Image (tube, rainbow, N blue to C red; front, side, top):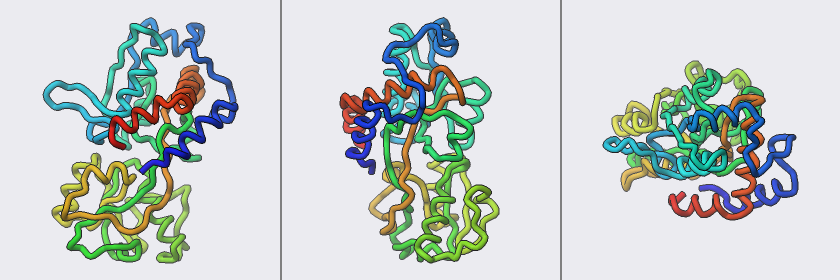
Length: 282
């Protein structure tokens, strides 16, 4: 679960000028910024979102409509760029979202995208709009209750996510693994075999199905996402670890970056984001 107090503190700090970006963003969309002008001329803000994360972003299979916290946030951003600007949603996964930003197919991504120092080298991130922690979901019958119980097990994670690295780091921090072969910068879930193995999947429902079939013995991702797949026959291990902060992602150096960052700071400070979080039961 997010720490709303921490998020609101970020909003206050942002109002004092402590921000992710060095530049100061205006509350009005500057038409002389080429990226913003292109969106205004197009009349469409192209946004990457998840399609299967309840509360954050879900696509209705019949109507095609996207609903959730991040979808509403994207719509609010579009209206700040221009009253007539619409949102064009594209479903992304942890493995595809960054490449669609790099290619220019998307203007921004709001898809439970965790801010990390490594990622900030390649993309711009707004001030975080949500905070969570990583956890592990297991079948109750597995008798897995703690991080140490994952030794010798296979854990399901999403391709392109940071969950596997966070889990290994937590096991090292808790002295369950010695970490001699762990390199955070070069960590690859597909080749890691020390103490725990990982199976990567394209989406969360596939991991949940694999957990039910015992193809994996645990499901690791941010707890707010795991809550969707918790049932009476499933539970969380006792530990939570690796606090995660989600930000709006734009291409590195984009003129859109500072503008969106200013909006997020404003909405943290005025309670807009708090209201959306509560409305979506996050």
